[in-house]
Image 1 (cartoon, rainbow, N blue to C red):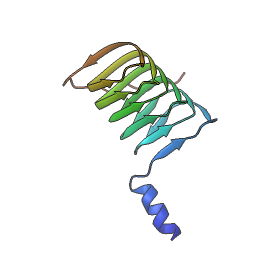
Image 2: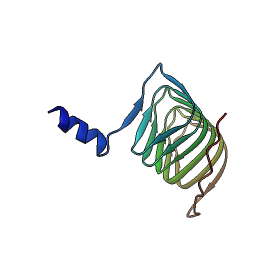
Image 3: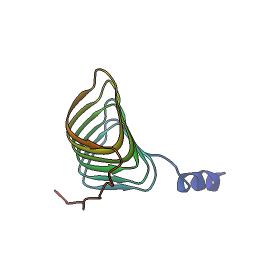
Length: 126
């Protein structure tokens, strides 16, 4: 039964950064990632970013899609859909194919969207 759980994790499990956890540095996730803690650094995610209501990210983020309920300050590159929930606070620059912002969100950004190819930016250590 343990090998079955291990196989699930390897075949598309969700990475998680829990509430009360703070990471300083760069993260690379091959699958979806949920952040309820804090990330001070850069994130490159091949799947979906889910930023919980208490989650905070300060840095450069690249992902396939994103649901933001918490706080982001920095650059956000989303290849598909960015969903900004009412509890979200975003400050910085955004490049996304599609955007949905709920009423109540704080959205202080420079935003480019719609069909443009999004170029990856190299990660730089702080």
